[in-house]
Image (tube, rainbow, N blue to C red):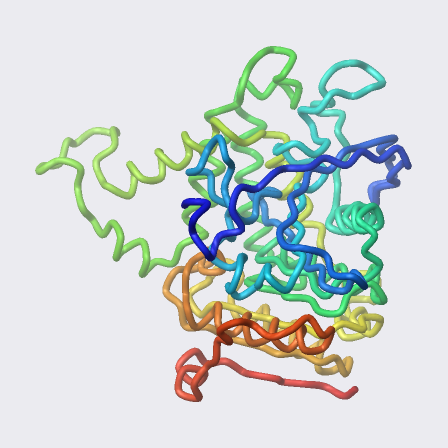
Length: 408
């Protein structure tokens, strides 16, 4: 990535916002003060109507697009989607990426210093939820002078946040992009998350969450958690295509060392993750996933829960995603239609599994671009220099269910 790349937002600069107003959490506890780290790309227009919030998933951060001047290889995790002339066009939109509370990329989290004790929060950091994140994000929008978002977008856990925005602040968001997500986790997903947490908490170096004081890192537990998660993020076909049953050596070793390429890959990914991610943050993020269930307070009636929303919705799923399969997105779409909300649904035939929402797929990006173009027209921010159009055949090939709309 280079700052000469005309489709890059260029060198990104992280910013920090401090909040002294207490944040009362859904769990009943209070954060007396906190900080949010964020990045912005593009320019806010005169009437401040062109802002799009990007919500990150479990291991994401505020670094959504561009690169860092002192580390050009550290490219934003959704750089393929966001930038000048890209699906989310920063020549027309002001894009904000935020590291959520409880994160480990600069925002207040378990590794941060608790002002009351002068020590890291550690295990004392309270459990946070999707609802808590949305409230804190809204406060950041207040700080930036943004009274209403043109849209909020996210995949997986990020998509849940975009959905929650339409419920917590129905008058403050125009459109929600809910990608590779679900209105609540399946039992199987909760089980995967618990196994991952158990791998971490049973690591002797975890020290009940206070490993900072012991100058330790529960790397073994984090490694196992990431290895398990990584398996679920990829489809079986993709794993077979990339690794098959290829051996590291020409013959079987008849031992328990690494023998297959897939074993080597997973261990490498686990080791790398354990070096950069915080174990307590992993616990918090997976619990936020488990707890998300907007229909709970409506007796399990999702359509009733969504009745307060006023936004338009873009919902997308991927056929090969077995962790958040298309039927979960269809469940959301059905409820949105029942509650007479405007919703566009795309079911995309991509082979990559759950990670497909992060990867390059021209047809997937073109669908987002087309929807974003409509938002641009709605708020009057001008035309894309080179509009991306889908041919009828391409739409059919992607099994896109376009503009499946309820009433006004």
